[in-house]
Length: 210
Image 1: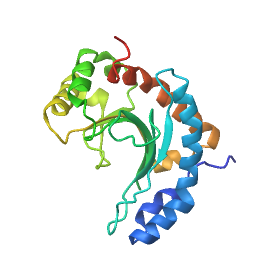
Image 2: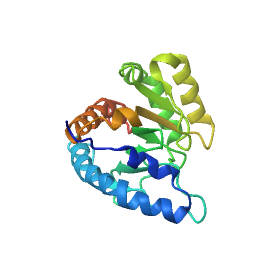
Image 3: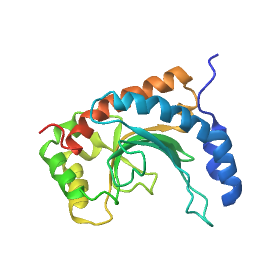
Image 4: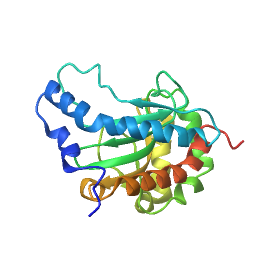
């Protein structure tokens, strides 16, 4: 039987009580994998040719009381800071794993991004049926693109254009049970496939197609 890359213990980190205890569990069990994934996929994304990507493992350094409910490694074409840029993430909630392209509220070009995606909606509607979208990175819930359709996408993009705190996330979710059955090779292949399918969306987002 193949050894799985992720385990239930990784997801259970987010049920540990207390900030210090949860951070210790996160640093010991999950962050080493984030570092591995960060180094590997930063090279993969850099090879796309739109700039050199750098990995950023979430540190949750500003937290003083509330323990993190999720964590991630982000990939962006900047050595320092990534939240103001369109960026990719691999991360965990207690319930699932996510691999996404994220435009979050710190991004100064949200209006331009919304317009470009509205103009090139096919890069979203042509994604496989298991791809999801969300308007808030602070919430674990998301909707499948094939279920909300063009009308739902237009609402999310309109909100990105008009609401200061609005966000736009697109990618895949993998339940903890599904993730815990994948070997390292299987998970890396799954993440590779997800990024490959998200890169055309990224090209529209950063305006590289014009």
